[in-house]
Length: 616
Image (tube, rainbow, N blue to C red; front, side, top):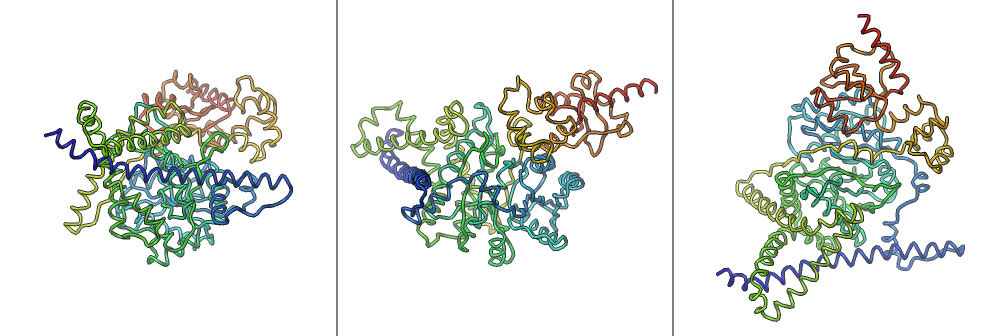
């Protein structure tokens, strides 16, 4: 019976997989054309410039599309006047990550005019307290309270954040030229806001690439996100813009010019995001394109050794990934189809087909894997198949090899060859995970439709990156020192050109007498978003000093000096490491809040307090 089923399904399944594979091959070829066109255009420009002339573009439309993907130079970024940017962040039970997100990104972003508007629900007190703690000391953070309890949906939360932003603008006489969206766990690249500012001169919607942070090979579920986003953000998003199709927002790192925001609000009863939508980000790109707004996704590129992209951790376990992908498939493939149908523009209809074909392609992919395994153990059935089946199988096999090779190259470019060796295994895992999510999505959508009830928002749990990951997304110390006037750019360049004998840049500058210790630590506080430590013994609470064992405080040169709202404030003379955080967790359940002090001041303070303790 199994042999008969196998023989009956072999030819139609091979043909179906072949059609889907040819569709992917079209995108591969389109990406090559867009890349080669951009490279040729830049090459011709250099030749023309070297000859002291200018040239007429080969084909105006194609040339302009190719130029979209040419990254601006630092001089071009600096020449663009900075527009005020507001970042909306919808929150629900994000108290564990939002403080770190705000502190890090406020310190890391190399942009002079940015404000954060985190939106909370009234029945989420821990998150409200976390935001207010940052708001109390940071004038660029403004808490937005929704008028009703949550959770509702991310779209509804964002809509109320925008209303609060309008009220804040009216009260403070400020107008933001660009509205951005970010999540509670996002790492914003230090230069990404400068790119958004640059591209928003010509485009109504600017999408910063989104890439997963690297994880070990032993975490294949998260590795699958690394693979998919590396390919999608590098290839598909570029080809969408090159073809002139709509560019969907990824929900984070999306900047919308203010006139486009107002056009969107006017067209949709002042609701920027459809509250009932499970994938409001995808619909945002679709709705903006329908209003005639221009869109671009910034190309995935490297700058100063790091990728200009929003980085974050995605679900790392099967259950969480299944939950998130169920929401994606329900919203993109089913709900958007129900709400918007098919567009009249052929290029957009084609991309809608690609976005929705997973409803069939995912189960077929898993079935194909099962039949491949069965065929390996029953090779006689494959050998006895018809010539048509043999040709379809050969073509399908070739296309699958090309698909894996293409993904391998994109993944290797971002995460390295070693990580890319796991692509085939994660590809099989992805077929199983996406098939399970598709089944869940169809079941949920059908059940909700039969009962005439709205679909429920499936929220994904967020985890904030470790300090090692955070260190990769900081402004360079030299930039902070020179930009803040503690030293000159020439001094920094001279220091970087000489071998520092194993010293870090700050230590080397101190040894050379190029910067004062106080200035260096002020720059480190700015770079890492850490506050300065206490200056006087009276600022130290004696009881807090006894919360950590003396041998730990001595070994790590720590000074616990205050307890506030469940956080233990600790002064230290070096940047905290993940190892230190894990050690402190053994001795206290209070969350550590680190403050920096120069070694000399910290040592003097500890000495005075030790003598006072002996007298008492």
